[in-house]
Amino acid sequence: VLIGHLFPVWLNFKGGKGVAVYVGVMLALSPLTGLFAIGAWIVAALVSRKSSLAALAMIVLVLPLLFLLGEYTSAYVAIVMGALIFRAHRENIARLRDGSEPKIFA
Image 1 (tube, rainbow, N blue to C red):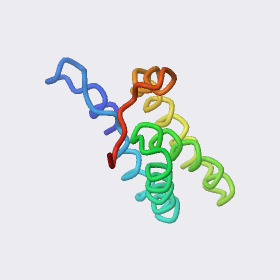
Image 2: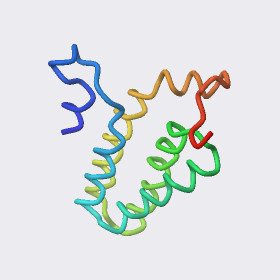
Image 3: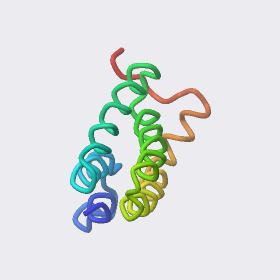
Image 4: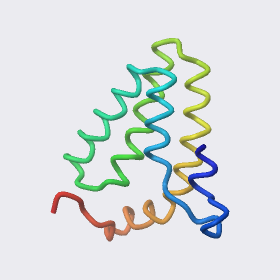
């Protein structure tokens, strides 16, 4: 599902960022982790006012929880998905570095 979202054939392989797919997969694999992911995104978005930074922070924060819960298979899925999502956000990361990433809730 994530690959199809990130690289849709009918849009010349230029798709979305995959964050909603990530959250949906986390909710399906580990509901507690999925809810934590949503909460982490909300807190990070309110603090940073940047959706891309909130998404990347969410991905990083979910991994330790999965390992603490013993959800090792889900953690490995999250690592692969997270790597693909970080790749999809590379332009956002460049804008975050140079300070030009747009804010949300402005």
